[in-house]
Image 1 (cartoon, helix red, strand yellow):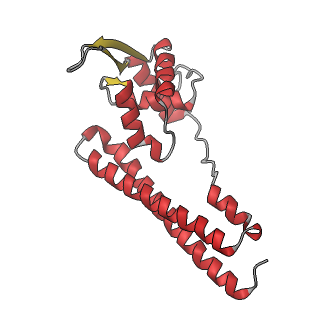
Image 2: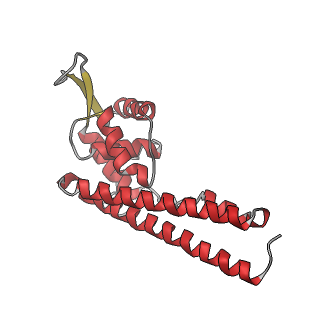
Image 3: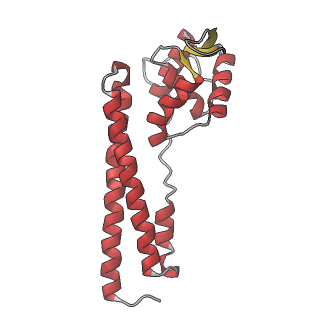
Length: 198
């Protein structure tokens, strides 16, 4: 702990998903569950978590119970049902700031289906392995385009300055995944030339 956090209150044992939702609220706007879902799909879903509505509402209830968020009902602009909007509290903002500054970083866990199939490549025909890698290359390119588009959409909103940088990271990550799949396809061609497949 550095000198700026000495004597700071201990963080509650919330799951990382709670901190992610609180982080979405940390731009100090009132957001509905729908808004949070939309924001998370446009940013968090590319690198960390793509929540369901039920997960979002569970986390919002947990945050309200902890005193980190509060909510109110507002009349809709159109339609007949009120909607509940959530806002971060001062205590919640202090907590998420402390968490972002001091919580230990979990290393990324690589759970890579195409890589597992490549590892088991001795059990597959070369054509099937090429199909798997080509599909992954296409998936990575689609995700790269999505990150690029979301970053462009976010450029007009000052609150999205750092989420936009994260989207650029995601764009570069999926570019690398696409290029790795392409390199693996080339490696398979080279391997095929060196020895027969079983």
